[in-house]
Amino acid sequence: MDPDKIVKDTEKKTQDSIEHFVNELKKIRTGRANAGMLEGLMVEVYGVSMPLNQVANIIAPEAQLLQVTPFDPNSLRPIINAIRANTSLGLNPVDDGRVIRLPIPPLTEERRREIAKQLSDRIEDAMISMRNARHESLKFADSALKEKQITRDDYVSIEKKLNDMISSHRLEVERLAKNKESEIMTI
Image (cartoon, rainbow, N blue to C red; front, side, top):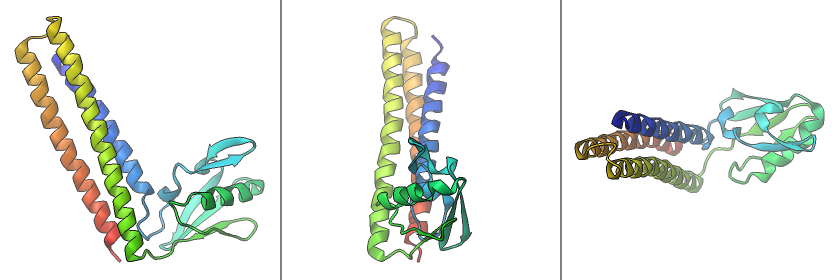
């Protein structure tokens, strides 16, 4: 049993949590058009639910406008329905028969606060994920200690390294969140 392997595995899991958090931040609306806002939006086409980016091209030609161009014109209506059905986006699609335009309305102060609240939920999800990774690793190290695969000193070392790692990753998540919050609250 290699104590460093336990720490490396936890490092990978916490890095995955941070990557997921960064991807979730891209989906949060800031008042500026960003193709990432539509990431993860599922569209029902050809009898199958598919991600929007697999059935259409998404660009931001202006700061306050997203443009969605379906690869197949027959999927225009399902894309519009999927965008309208997603209330967290708060977007109203306009189509000309070939292209869907999504004007990004300026955020009100109330809406900015709601979005900031969504941000705090995502922060908590990332923290929980990292704590769970640490907890699993400590549980694994504890069982290795009981089976005498590692020494007590190894266990203490693993615990310290994991706690330090989680602390540094927590600071990174908080830094990313603070940047996103300032982006949200900027008018």
